[in-house]
Length: 295
Image 1 (cartoon, rainbow, N blue to C red):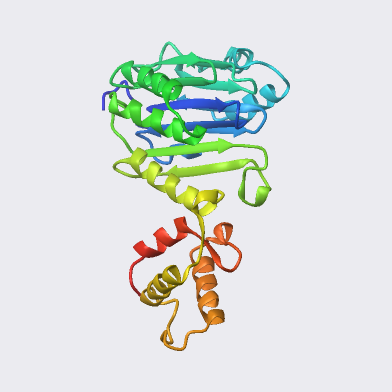
Image 2 (image 1 turned 90 degrees about the vertical axis):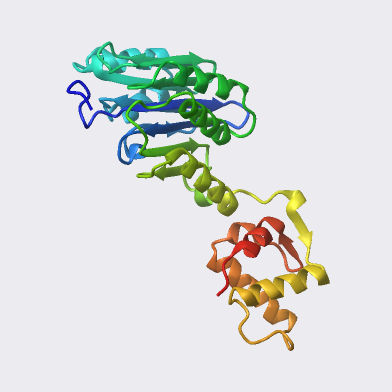
């Protein structure tokens, strides 16, 4: 750490993105900074997404979204945010608006290497990086990757790390994706809101918990819904017994007792979103059960 790199500066790289087909907006970020997800990412469904970093002005998040909601473009909002900010030369911001327009700003006093890349539906930026390869890798990967917006954002973040990443190291990461009524129960727009606050490999940990989030909360795939055949039922009974959900032996186990144990498993492990009508099961849950430790 040099005198020119204050300890509380948010040395960060991030990518802000939009998926017009899914109508999703999101931000993925990694930093040598504790709990970066509490500072950098902001997004609102139908409005846009913002990453504010370097000497982050967190007011840029809500203020910028309010301006985007009024119909201003990403570039217009960026100019309005920095215009009257006395510390704008230390700020870094990435914005994507409701139509996928993008803008990125790096103040002239941000610590090297610092800069950004924009394109249709994305803005990638970073500061205190090994080099510009990090933002170039994020931009290229986001544009070329397939999958959901969340998957493309994570892939881009990982590519940025592999290209050099934050010069000071790694500590935290976050992923925020919004979609109209995308939150739990449809009550808000936070389809994905995941944070790794302190970890030696935060992007890989973010990828791991993203997969868990998808297991728990994404809709089951039609091809994974199968009938509970006699053979599959025998396996489920063995696994439910091994994991302690069936405790009274299996020789006299009735159908009702089996389904009661299966329901207890689903509810204990928070798989309510993957429950199926009696006689059917989601194989994603079966795979999870097979890997559970024994009681």
